[in-house]
Image 1 (cartoon, rainbow, N blue to C red):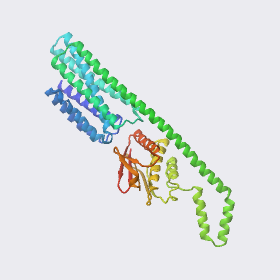
Image 2 (image 1 turned 60 degrees about the vertical axis):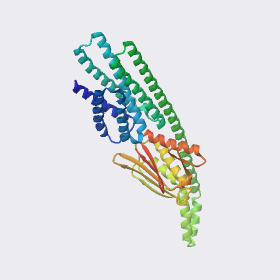
Image 3 (image 1 turned 180 degrees about the vertical axis):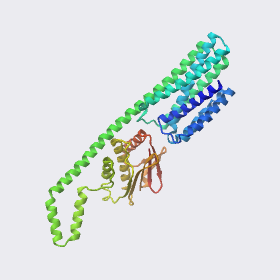
Image 4 (image 1 turned 135 degrees about the horizontal axis):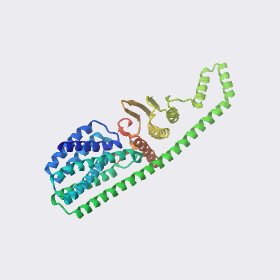
Length: 418
């Protein structure tokens, strides 16, 4: 019996600690094995004490695990791990209800107690595995949504209160042996509260997902319009230059005939620049070339120095998302460097082990930034569009389970990891 309890407890704790990894990327996969042992030993020790207020200890252990293993996604990982923990408590409540039901009608015999307890453990774990499988199958429901950390913390606190109510209730049932009908009513009440809470959370997810899809659709339309306008502009320019090709050749020939070599070279360079053969980067992904080239086309006219180092094509990201992400990032960089005399942009896209990263740094005017609520806010007049641009950047990063870190020193540094 003890061996079965230990095995089932290890399985339960492993699945509980693994649950947030369905939704966010874990930092140290091996860490859950360590905390699985800690949580199992702690649970067995607390059971011997039978003191309900010590229920806070497992919550603190789970919070520490989320902080270490899901540092950038602490709030969302804490929510999911307490969510599954609370579900297990509700299942325990139903198992206790069934156990009490059998004991009342069949009598409190030793062999019955030994028979019911292992069945209860097995049913508990089967339900846990089913829930785990269900969430994996419905994973797409939770894609492309963002909930603020404050909202996630409020949901987590609600779950903790629910878990506390269930734990205290279970302790009260064991000690006082309350009547069957009261027990059943309390179980149904707590279950309904939890189901309503879960339903509200799913509604919030769907609402956020709808907003995200609308923003992506609008951003995609804006990009397609911008792409067409740039293409049309370059086409018209090349068409005009081709039409005047005879005049250009005649003028260059005349300059060379009169030994005006410098003037001829300057004239050729002017034509070469206007034709639009500017290439800031050449990768195997055409859309990546277009985004960077189109954004940096006018950098020489603005006296912007740039360094581009692309060793990864971001193949995991679709074209529209790539355009929205890099387009907004480069727009923000170019806008920032225009406000200073020392104009410099550096873009690095590379891969280190299994981590794909985008490092972007640029010179900037410190007075153009304001720090509010833990975020850097642009002081530019078009704040609404800037806010939408940053929101789109964050949405794309969240969609691909990435992280963004902003560091400010002599440069404005943006680090993005996938």
